[in-house]
Length: 281
Image 1 (cartoon, one colour):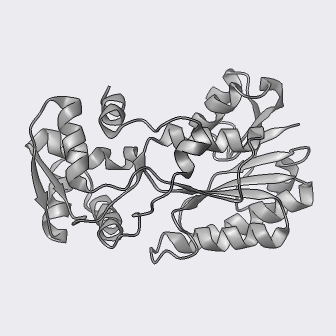
Image 2 (image 1 turned 90 degrees about the vertical axis):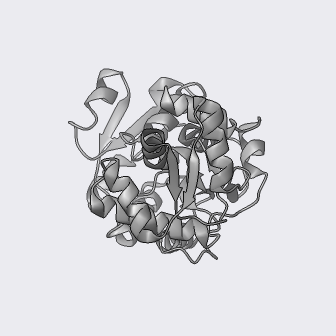
């Protein structure tokens, strides 16, 4: 049985590979990267590397040859639907027997602009007839590091999420479920991977516990929110993207309650305070 992780040089893929190495023989693990340069560290570590770009169907088909179980890490927004269709088509042509795909919270019903590509990809995998698990990942705690960093600089945690709730968890925990999925865990076709949905006020309390600092909290408008991130060193276009995430949170897009995550891991999720400590080390 051969296992392949796409997006293997990114944060999620790297964490998934680490988890997978504890579950299956190293010689049966393959990592997909866009270039030999990006994969240099993996090659040096003895990982089997295959090269392909999501935009290149022939490369993908060759890269998937002999692969049985695929952890399909979603690509970056842009031409994502076509790129993901290329991955699915190549997997089917290569005879891949199972796909675990990193999707989005409540993908088929979500009103978030982020969800559309994932909803498309889920349907493409279903249409291909390949057995699968959709890993509907809620939100990485790592995504909040710019806000946490700005708060620790200024003493004020500025957000624009209102009373919206988010099911934060560590990226490595999401990645571990992905690794367990392709390693052969008996998972259903859909896993709503969400921590307990909580507000930013709860997150701020966790940051205070983790750091010993007292923070004021400001639920800001778009202008003030973006200004706080720019003041902390983020480029204005990036701050604007982060505001889009905040608008989704305020709208309740990530307020998804499910016990799938702890069940899939086989243990409770790391607490927010411990997660923040880990990320700030």
